[in-house]
Length: 272
Length: 272
Image 1 (cartoon, each protein chain N blue to C red):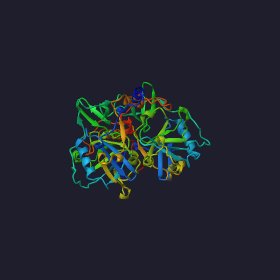
Image 2 (image 1 turned 120 degrees about the horizontal axis):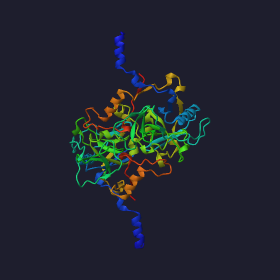
Image 3 (image 1 turned 90 degrees about the vertical axis):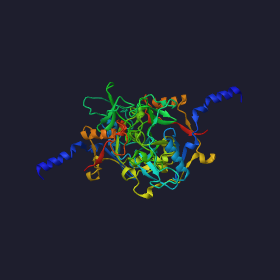
Image 4 (image 1 turned 180 degrees about the horizontal axis):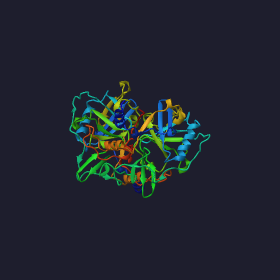
């Protein structure tokens, strides 16, 4: 291959637009029907992320159950009271973090009902309030959070939920978000809805078994999912947002000219 | 019962806060797993609603299939090309209507990313643009629309979709909405996701049979669903919106103080 041809190929495929997530921050949740891949957000919830890694590494989730599927809201699973061996049983809430000058924030241009400004941080949908000096993750479809009791400081990661309906943004800053599902959402969103209060399954026979939950870094490379994500600080991401704001496919009659935060899914693809 | 006690009971149960939908505007979609009830919106899509009633009355849907379930988006079902006997095969688009002075509009106070103003009309989530003099239905969870080809005037009602994911508001004014699911959403939202492009099922064996679709008015009263809806021009609805804007349950740490249009579900209950 000539240097010129090689250069042309590199220019045609801007590899740096995509990043491979740190396997320390990937959880593989193995269900009978397949794998759910979660990317964790240590910037926003360092203590909960560390505790989740501990829980996964002590095999805490293996054999636990998914016991709740509330329509247009969330699914929830975990130990449901089972004690952990090495992980903390409760942690202080991590609902928001201080804005600092080094925080990369890719803003969206069209505003938001719930927050002064919305966009992406580390690939996660997020909001910030410059006046208050705070930033937080936003409850979009596929976001993963930490179940808690009424006291804000009662979550640990032993029980998790994933948003499976219209974004419940009223939960923002009320509960600790720890990450987002990168693949496998249909394994959760397509589950039968529980018929008990809050979508809890009324019959234990309806529970979905969690076969195992592992940190990707602990698996051999061949067993890892091999996903990469579009970086949000790229022209490609800017074009992606614009394509969502103004849909140009022939089917569309009137491009919206606007886009809401939770209508911008982050592009994810298998590593090429 | 004394007149005073009777009066107290009437005041305690403001029956006029609730309305029973016109059974001419209710469709019952009978699936093997149960009934989906749809309320139609003739103010916004009179021609499509009339055609849907014709299709239902000629038994068009009976034996058709639900053939698409796209994650975080829609399910879709219908004749998929089967000709109708009495109903029109294509209708002019009904994407929006003129604002008129008589249109009841219950506005929401917190703005919207996609439209100048949002609220409720006849109990349906809607938007309006006073400057343009137009109003339209909004793609919230559970809204029902009319599938079409690229040409805007190619829908008829022979194929329908229901929003099962985060609100795809970019579809507003791009496709004709005809109503909303009042009950039975879990029968649609919990279906397995199709693995073909756009969530189409790849194997016909995965299709869900539509046993029948009927106009409620054509059924004996005893076979009707008996649902009633909270009117939006009531103090009770105003209190409902405020309760969604500022959640006061003990679990909540920081009430949002805002609410998005698609985060205000219309209360529906069995007729008491």
